[in-house]
Image (cartoon, rainbow, N blue to C red; front, top):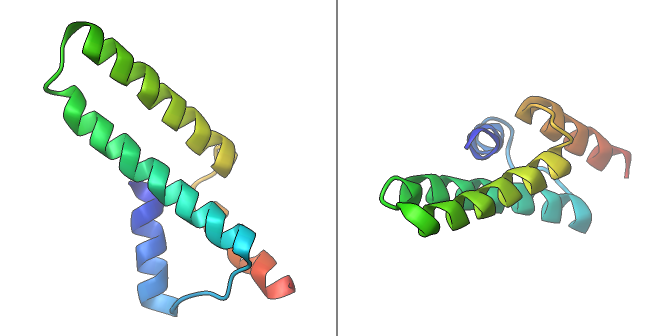
Length: 89
């Protein structure tokens, strides 16, 4: 949950940034996906057989969506771009 931790520490250090609706949605989508991935990893430990295969497919889908939202960038790059672009508006 590297994006969630990074954003949390960013807010603690600098306060809540002023964001557009789209930027706010992007951050919430990233955090929601990370939470879902984390839960799936925890559940995956207790599954076997077809249930494990199905959950792994869902996890892959979440990883793929997260990668698309972040363009494969590190949390500091993603949030730096969001914060910088919010100051331009």
